[in-house]
Length: 320
Image (cartoon, rainbow, N blue to C red; front, side):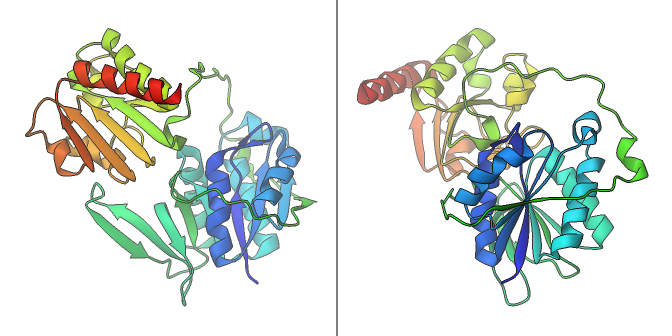
């Protein structure tokens, strides 16, 4: 059976959920071979094997931490040369998309970004994407070379499928460009205790209707009751009410959770572009003519300061 390279997104050996989703998709088109790089790479093997990786290629070197993406591109190219895969899958993070683009150029292949589904086809893997702010769904395949595909988080279920997970050391020769850009400092992101926005199964977002930074406590309370991440519209971010790192939209982050709750968000095309692929969308807005109601599964016309606290109380009561 053909093999499929899967780039592993991990933090000191803790595998992040999008990688486990990639393994589910990889099994549809071949046998997953995972590539784990950097500190703790060998510690990823157990989780990867549990979710279908037949082999885990690992490499650790100072270059992976001290420099930007090129050392990782070198390593993924080395894995590509060893495995000769049918496809290469990466998560659709900012870093992984740059790695994917650079790898595609090196191996002379086409690239598909932000796929939301993947299936086997007679002429190679077929990817599903959302286009034009998710107004259309397209199905496409790479016509030249080995497909390099990045997949949006929450596009596939995490399905355990125990496999051998044989660990092999990957020999990497770094290119001259690998040390061209050095990382001089890092600032850890302050933890909120909430899920990562792009990976969360539930996202609760606030917009212009929240009317102030202090009022985002209402949005946060609902999110915490649901175990959700907190998002914000561009209007709320531009007003300084919430950090840019939480912005959902065309100039922010794209999310595709199981449940998206938009509170006080009108539904401008810029925002819709970042959340329209959510599986279930709920909107709370006092303007019955707001564009957001054109795409929702459930809509509540009402003042968010009345509706959201009641919803939070109801969720808390049911959990209790």
